Image 1 (cartoon, one colour):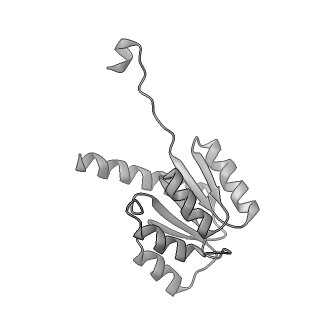
Image 2 (cartoon, rainbow, N blue to C red):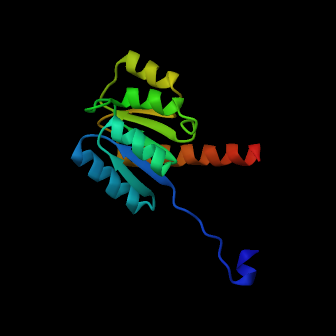
Length: 142
């Protein structure tokens, strides 16, 4: 309909927040996600991650557990307590494979838990799947 009048509907890029303290992982994820046409914001600890999530309102947060200042599980718990904190999908992306860490993350409503080292193609598939599910749920609720 908009094309009829010569006006194209603006679409925004999906925004993904990478919250991890490992520079190589952050850069690899940032590069690969941007190659796949995602808008990427970065935080290097949980405290900054929470602030950036509030400012940027990402669609998906990739979140490490072991970080300085505030770890990823603490950030996740604080995120979910915010009025807007249920909005972003969260994928834990961490070397922590202990049952109690996974259970704690699940209790906070994560969408997936991926243990490092991880396959980038598989991560991208999981992100796409989560985004597709959200789109379907949005359409049903409208």
